[in-house]
Length: 143
Image (cartoon, rainbow, N blue to C red):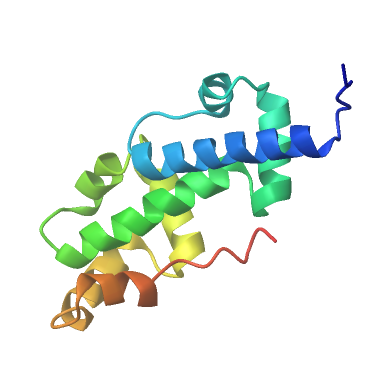
């Protein structure tokens, strides 16, 4: 029987598969209440190990990744123009309008209300798949 060390290729592959499941869950369930502890339990890892490995694999924290997904979805909803900023905030799973607005401004460069006003005219005639790619938030302030 072969002993498996902590840093063996088998362990690394298993951890990467778990991290991918966590990332997929965030992508799918971004609007649900998610925290590192619950995500870690879902893949049978400790919260600390998940946090460290996620940052190593993807270059950002679990929370930052979750907020980026939420902000991306919020941008799409704001471009539609039929929901208020407060409605969009809650629709994407944020529970605090202040935190949502702060994170949105950090990632996008303008407050959500300004983005909503300006995006309404810019997005007309542009396919949503193109608008999503062109307006994707870039996380460079946390690097």
